[in-house]
Length: 462
Ligand code: SF4
Image (cartoon, rainbow, N blue to C red; front, side, top):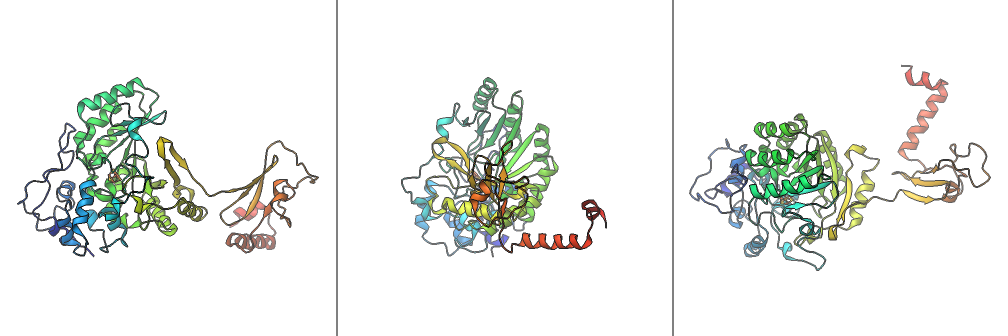
């Protein structure tokens, strides 16, 4: 619905002066906008220039209203933006198809008055990151990992951001002296072998500024893996330049975790960005946040996960929304995540299934949640169920059945009783009637019976 001209017209004459992180020292520009009279390009030759995209971000209600004229209550939105800043790259804005919250992209990037509603269970920093910072900006929570916030700037500001307390409040990045403090801490703590560069978004920094950080961290012998957390391939895919790739590949092992939330974000440009990164030998993962009205639908997550795997991106986490101020309207009940996991298992390959996690309040870290696959347990058998309702027992090693079961009792024996018969080894399976899988197996069994062939002949006889 919104083409490039709508969006370029929206930012006309109001570009920002510099992309965040444009200085090679690592200190970035402030959020001020200058060059108000500079004209935007009258064609789209600069559309694929990431610096042009940053300079032409949508930053004000007036700019938004030019291409979203039905936007209600500008004054209220200004109040929201005074608390949580607005930035949308022209590229990401061009993915909006409807001017309301029925559109997933709109919901994720356009401010909502609902951001001002905060029930008491929410807080600015529910993960208590500030309390796990031995050096400002360095979160050391788990024994072997640390997370370093290298910038507070992002290309676009997600309305569901878990670091709303810092993202974009002041666009700045790590200073050389702070980087040295961090390096000193990591050197003194060789148990930290995995450093995650986060923010804000590290890939909004200039390549030189980012390299200064990565090369310093890489120089610490005990650091094995450097990971980068970024939403740039989603909101600014043209940032994945050859220059950036050539820099990153010097510092392997580099891993990269992205933040795709909806299949609409899997555009041709995003696919090209992922291909460049994957071709450079960078393992790619994705962290999706479960968002009400955006992706809280099993089929949307299925489509997203399938699409990611096609781009060589491993769906890594499906995050429950954190208890962060300003995002109550995005929160889903935990049961929604469990329902989605129930749907995915068995329908798509394990490599496409993310872990559903809750990053617990009070700095408890991530806890994975799963549907319950354990039906019952006894000292000799554990009774499990699969995605389609097949219930089987798994005999424990070295245990004899407690009941008077003949040898071979754990061969396939369908019970006429119930779960207890499985738990004590009197039977091995409760099978759902007429499942697709069951029907397929019946046909194969019949075919084998008719062919009367041995197993290997059946396998290899073409
Ligand atoms: S890119 Fe990441 S840090 Fe930046 S606003 Fe989005 S979620 Fe927050």
